[in-house]
Length: 556
Image (cartoon, rainbow, N blue to C red; front, side):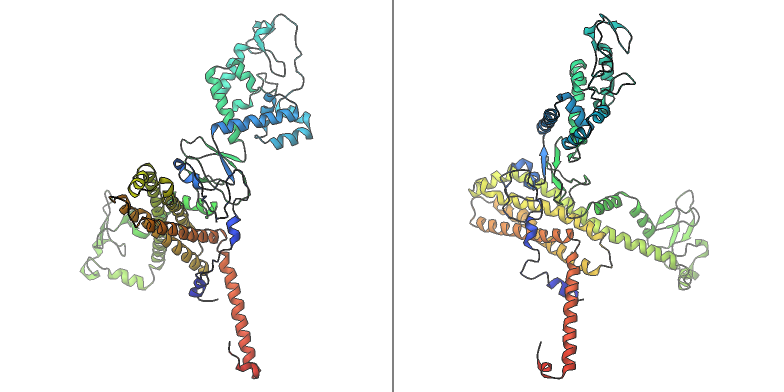
């Protein structure tokens, strides 16, 4: 295989390694009216969006749609009406069917037309009453066993008679028990007839109706396989997701971005498995144990871990143990003194170490130390980019609420012509997110795949350098124009510079994203091509050497 520099040089030429088909690879499904301008897209769109939506308005929504409460209600009603019309049943019965089949209209149609009778019996939509209607002037309630006039007796499709008071109590109790009230059945223990929302509307209190309607609305999202609530605290928006694009990152109107597949924060281009392992590692005790193993030793008497925080080898365990021992050999300190090397050395330890008595212990300590240092290296950079991203979001908010208007006044430029600054900040926020997760990717990249690691670190370094230049430009260079007394002739140059840095940084990160999503497979293909090329050259040279004819005088 070629050298590391050769591998990197093959990617650093002026021709873009990443093919144009990437520009159209994401989000083939189009659920909205956004125009595709052919730009490479991994989370940004060029559109006049409401600034208050921040990142959400600039992230592509081609494969998902954000639903407000009124949108959820509208879609829910439309599905109920569609099933009601196609199956020629009431809307109450249609809603019962849809809830049972997780709000899948297609599933309802398939099951119904395959075996209508079975579906009716399973769901509890009876064609004829179990208890035939009675002409008696008084009927007995099946719960309280009191007699009532027919006007005060209510039944569902099964015909079992219960008084309105008992119905109200039964419905109220079930609603207060939780969302299970949506699958309410007839109070008769032997009856499976379903109780629809019409009974709730007629008999429940206003408070219970509100609870029931809330459960009913939430079931449309929580039982639906292609919809999820936004996991951000306090957010009531839902996401209607269209599978098939391969990109699971979505952005809610509340500005929170998350992964549809695992509901963790958005982490493209890193897969959900890697993110899950990384989050678990950050919250687990494994690194605490590594730190203890690398930086402490157990007291020879009580076995509690002790950290050495001063230069002397004389250790004293904390009360109530108070055992005094040597840090190096863990022997009793009373056996130490000038003859063993004094307070800052231990001859006994050196002799034992030469004899190999501490090899396994030292090996374990060294492994723990290396593991801890490696984890710390990646975690600090992961956390640092998260902090930088949050700071960038705060700075963008500050720009939108105060500085944009101020800059517009001082530079005599309409705010509509200052959107290049907003786009730069949005690019920074997105790139910080991507860069943050590349450190989790790098941590789990196998050490033996050396070529991939070299290529990954090259791409990551190029992207990070571009991002730092962009961040510095929009964060510091902008200040001179905000603090200027009047219009500056250099502002147009600043516009050109910032727009150029934004474009270049975007290209760097598109390259990085595509490479990681491909599993850095291009390194393998390059290695294969390089190997073939080397083999071809070698065989050519061999044939020339053997030929000793006219071909031997040709130059390569």
